[in-house]
Amino acid sequence: MLNTSEIMQTLRMIDQEKLDVRTITMGISLLDTVCDDEKRLAQRVYDRITRRAERLVQVGCEIERDFGVPIVNKRISVTPAALITGAVSSPIPLAEALDRAAKAVGVDFIGGYTALVHKGMTKADRRLIESIPEALSRTDLLCASVNVASTRAGINMDAVELCGSTVKHLAEKTASGGGIGCAKFVVFANAVEDNPFMAGAFFGTGEGECAVSVGVSGPGTVKHALEQVKGAPFEQVAETVKRTAFRITRIGQLVAREASERLQVPFGIVDLSLAPTPAVGDSVAHILEEMGLEKCGTHGSTAALALLNDAVKKGGVMASSQVGGLSGAFIPLSEDIGMIEAAECGALTMDKLEAMTCVCSVGLDMIAIPGDTPAETISAIIADEMAIGVINTKTTAVRVIPAPGKKVGDRVEFGGLLGHAPVIPVHPFSSADFIHRGGRIPAPLNSLKN
Image (cartoon, rainbow, N blue to C red; front, side, top):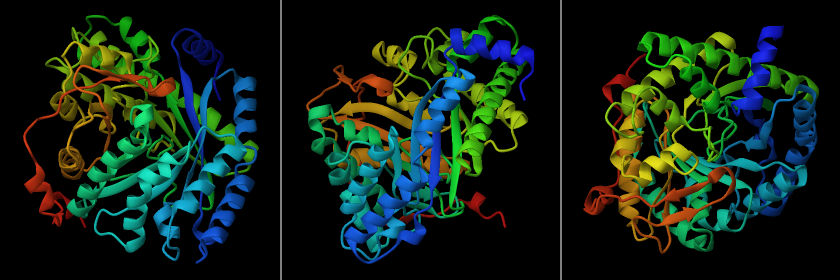
């Protein structure tokens, strides 16, 4: 439980420093809904979700009111859809059923239109990946993901090529919204089974029937804490971040346990991720600049981000024995006002973002690129990021938006938490021959740990 001092600190963090619980996410297993009839499968899935998550939004609102902690989103994640569609000819009816179920229970997003293809693809996997442009253009709340690489298996380059063309087609299908469908699709290496954040959330096969997890965020709180140690040595900076992360995680655990009890669903994990928003005062980039960088993206940015990410994880682990997901610092370009400013002035480039993903929690996230970028170039961007994840035994991801009709210097508006993004350049030289080789890049030597 929180003591009086922690309660007062928490009230200040919520009122003045933009601390919030970014999401309560209920994970739901769909493994026993499998059947060989598309309509019956869709109905079974709809019934399962609406029954399990019937009170999720209500309980989230009650906790928000009772404890005074803002809960921004209520979400659902489900079993990777490719695992339950092997006996049907098309996964589209399932996609539509997932979207209907999400709307029926009132959540903000539903994730799990997912395929896990890090070593190979089944026919069901390929069907699902190829259906993503159609599925996401015909739904509103559905999010999709594909895991194409792991440290144990290497990189499935056939899947990487397919995902590059999927991103391109998805942008074209949702061109009227600036390619916004791509904001709901992410490609992973080493995807985790208990991630509560979209667009990459799914409920893994190692999970139980159901679980409730919480994703908590507080970039503004961390920045405010660092303002009190301006000019101090890095040891003090790290300790300050750790203490702040500890307090933030305690709030997440409180909310998660309360939700678990009220919903009578097992408590999964608390994901402490410094997930920014476009609002002023809620930026990871501004935390790095508070450490002494004139502008995020300049030399020293990767080192500053490494310190931040490590200290956040250490503080979170001390606060809860059930910290999981993608805990650390996110650097989504369009969702972080400081990142947007840095990209607009030229301090932050694709190459620097890629370097920073070596030490952050995820990867190249919510980056707008020219609409005429070839599918092979998108695949090559994915391949580079997957290599970082595979070699470093960490989760990495790519969520890029080839904005239709836009060129470098233009701006794409997404709205809400997705913000807006300046279109940044990619290298003009072709990667097509590299991508068309296909096959699998073998697992690295450090995968042999048995």
